[in-house]
Length: 226
Image (cartoon, rainbow, N blue to C red; front, side, top):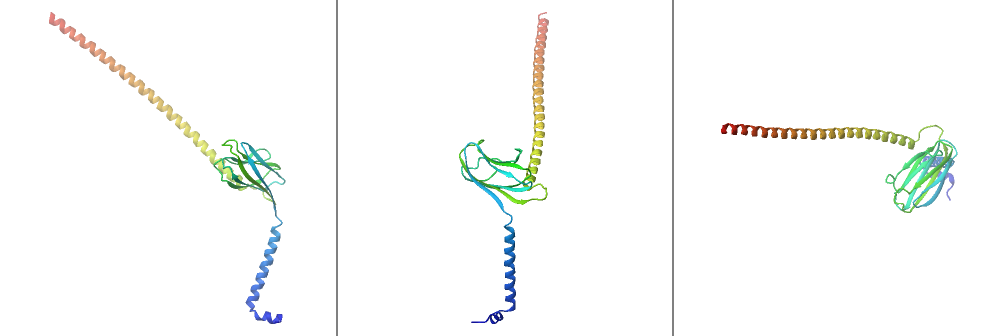
């Protein structure tokens, strides 16, 4: 049996330093893990069988500026449904219509109000086929100390501004289309009136020409008889 001192002397000094660094790294990892466990999130999972109706899950915001998450996964039935999140004032803070989302998606946002938030699946406006959707609502206990606009709200504001710009452009295009349509209709009316006037003028000239010819032939005949 080799004594401990003899065994330690068998290892080079670099190997001993490496073992010490590994031990320190393990201790730091354990400390970080122990510290990370202190922040936990509460998650509620529920599988909904949605017919031609709207079903919702609810969560209560305890603190302002706390983070929240919605995760939904369609087990069967397709993705032709609407997903919406409403705040305690019944104001829609997130909506995704059929065709805009996949069979599985996650939504992150910040709760700015105290009260009950609703997470809804609306299966009424479309085929209404039965769908099985698993929904998970997560509320973190880590409070966001600084009042700031979360990425979801920022994205929605940008989308609203973009849609407002498109709406204004659409109004301008409609006004231009209406003006062009009125101009074309006026041009058609003027062309029809001009065509009718020219036709009447030609008919009048033809009638006068016929009368003049008859008059000339009549005078020539009278001279021949005389």
